[in-house]
Image (tube, rainbow, N blue to C red; front, side, top):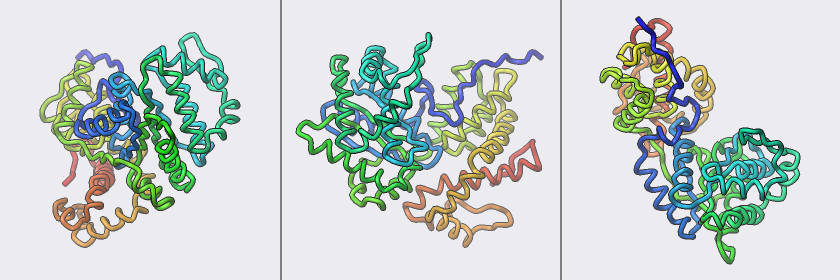
Amino acid sequence: MTLLTKGNSPFYPGQPVPVELFAGRREQIQRIIKRGVEQVSRGKPVAMFIQGEYGIGKSSIANYIQVLAEKSHHLHGIYAPLGGCSDLNDISLAVLGATIRSGVFDPRKSEKIKEWLAKYIGKQDLLGGLTLNFEALKSEAPALNSPHQMIDFLREAKNKLDETGVKGILLILDEINGITSNAKFAHFIKGLIDANALSPEPLPLLLMLCGVEERRREMIQKHEPVDRLFDIVEIEAMTAEEMRSFFEKAYDSVQIKVDESAMNVLVHHSAGFPKIMHLVGDAAYWLDQDGVIDEDDAVKAVLIAAEEVGKKYVDQQVYRALRSEDYRKILKKIAMVGTPSSMSFRKAEIVSKLTETEKKKFNNFLILFYIGKTRYFANFSKRSLCLS
């Protein structure tokens, strides 16, 4: 039998989904566009918090919104991941660097930004890639530590781009887990929104934070007025229809067919989490050797993905998750009705005992339970799943 030659996998485990492969989330996307992007394009500042569990696809949604905002609504997107940031200097550095790298969808905007911030740019190679002058960035970052200074910087960015038709700024602050424990971050965000709102001519700014609910609560704990700042957009697990659409679009892009039985396996065991969908889909892509993913390919892919998730995420996240008060409450309720010896329980029975907040966390809790259980059975069988 001739083996299929493999090209690039259409799946991106651990990365935001490319816009061309984005599927689902229609209601949430429409809300962000209507209440956020369109309002800012008309001159009104808006603050939104994209909220959802780990692996639910918040970064992919932010990336998709940025593309729509730039191409269809004349906003200039600045995507600043704050992973590793611990203080306001780090945040300023992240926003400066993100601004320098912005404008990739429009060469005119990219050139104007580079001209404006040329002193922070190092060498540029023949392919257009650039390096940052970190010494210059670090020396300048403290100048953006106050909300007023940051607003002035963003306002200047818009002014530099006015002749390209830019109507406002979209500032996305992602990966905020590490910074929310610093009380100054909550005060900075509140001050940023207030400083803009109270200025004589408020900057059309869509400030978008992405994080889990616990991080928003942590910000509120550090500074109570944060509770009133954001329009909260809740990102929940994808529906079966949305997952099916995603898998079909991804596999169609590389001319691979999926049997109905295989599709059912992929959809069922992905449980609505994009992180799991990409791992399962990627495993099935590499297992397939005839251009058709069958049920056997799909089952093996689930086992491989379960082991991968366990090594990459669960072993570290389960202890962190169990420190969550909501997760501990869920565990206690399961302990009251479950059967530990069989590692099984009825979802409906547990859901009926949960609060509304706990229900939002339950799907992510099940992912951890599900992955751990799959890995357990995978140690004994590579041929079938024994999940209840």
